[in-house]
Image 1 (cartoon, one colour):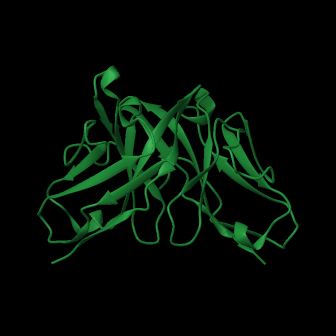
Image 2 (tube, helix red, strand yellow):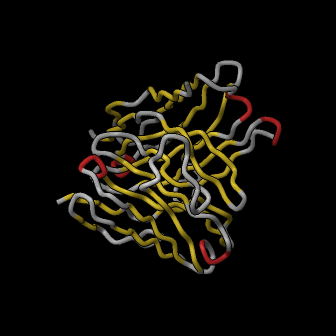
Length: 123
Length: 113
């Protein structure tokens, strides 16, 4: 059974950094690209970015809205994807999700999601 | 302001059929990118409902169907059930000068009356 579990969230002060982890099981982690999303309280889904599988260089792409402060990485030996967020702002308060990415005929979609991890940025 | 436009809410009685629209533009749906749909039950993570415009993952009832035409897509739910009450999001891909991005609709809250 495919499972994804985010961890590392919580209450953080503005300006600090945070690293979220996404631990995968039930599939060959290295065979898939992984994405991160967030959902602010009462709001919709926002794509943050993704990291390709190592066979495609393990490179990353980010949404224009988050480029510069967010960094996605992966450790295939541990089946973990990471999201590093620097210089946290109050508007970064959200539930953060990781997801397994699938490439369709024209575009990408996300077939399995973690349960989400709440990050609250407040002094 | 979401790149894809969905109605904020729809409603229907049990057993009825409802549709949720998703309107994009020439840089996303109109460019040929596929549309995917997710269901988010209250307090839970999104779940893939429809992929590649009209395909259902294993385990998704055939009461759910998707279609795409031009710059728009639709999700139809027939035989509405109480457990269908949730938020629904469409998702596609968008090509811009700054790069390509995954984009979502703002979400539609389905209320089963």
